[in-house]
Image 1 (tube, one colour):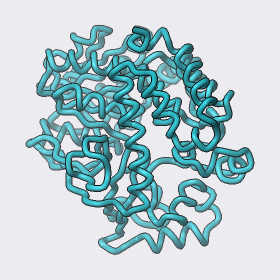
Image 2 (cartoon, one colour):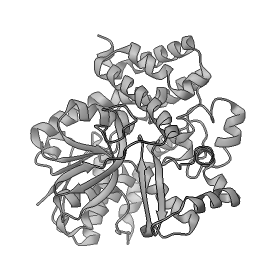
Image 3 (tube, one colour):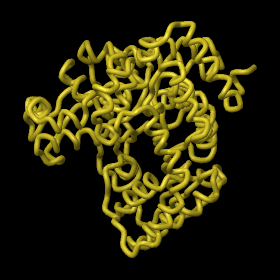
Image 4 (cartoon, one colour):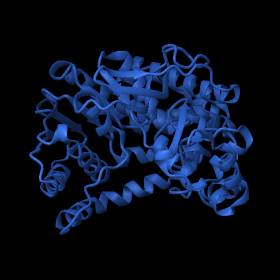
Length: 439
């Protein structure tokens, strides 16, 4: 019997999707799925959801639930981490304070002032989780889904010896979107994608072995509905020649070109960005709404007479199956430290690159050099993230200020004095969650 632990299991959409995927593999028919969350209410609700999935499949799997992390982790073969340190009511200030100073943030979970303070709250918690895993499940395959992905993985991979990588939806999600745009079936598409999380690009994108970029270009330039579906990303592609993996709402935050003036926001960010309308604080608003709706959503699911249990596209179950299940080799894009993988990005930074999962474990594939324009973009991001992680691990406020000062969007809007004042205000608002900065 295998055991897979979910740390931060209270998310309905994510946990239910991955549990369905896990149970779709014969090797995991009798798996123990250990759900752990600090909220007993959410834990009780998601347990009922998962039990319904088990019953629908007719599986011999066991669902256990606990608020005790050690209990959930002990003996685990696989661990999935998806937590939110501090909750929505503190996260909101990561977006609202920069907005007061003129930095208009849409999502705020990855980089820049909001992402860095989110990392500062989250890294100490994740390192505590990792220490527990080292004690009670040292051989486990650990998959992180928590943002800011690159900074968190960089810290965990440098401070622990765990077999850990980070996973994001954007690579396979964008590949599906591009395939739809050109009329291709997803299983006919192959690609090489590399860079840093949320700023990776498709270095090649092929349909039945032939370069599909000309077809993508044609769709973007000749079909208005395609251009307007992802305006920011399409502008980046049209100017630089490579398609980015993350949505326009996210991407608009990571560079200086789209959100530094209201007229630019109205031109590029608001007309249409796929799932995300690009408005300031959009995802924060969604999370605030879910604070009041999650219970009903889970209860409604449990009450359904029939549910869909087909396998989805999240990487987690595929990776677990490859390493300690049926051993079907699986290639995915994962977040891992750059030890000679991408030649023109800093050694040791966190990169998102092709990785092979098999019974031998997780093995990243050599990428070589990125095209110069992508290297410039990713190098700036990686250097800021390296500095931020160092500041968080050392409790050094000056390094946090410096990392935020060189964030492209922040630097395009504010002076150094204004950035310093903003950072100080964010530290004050977060002081309860950042005691290691107050020594």
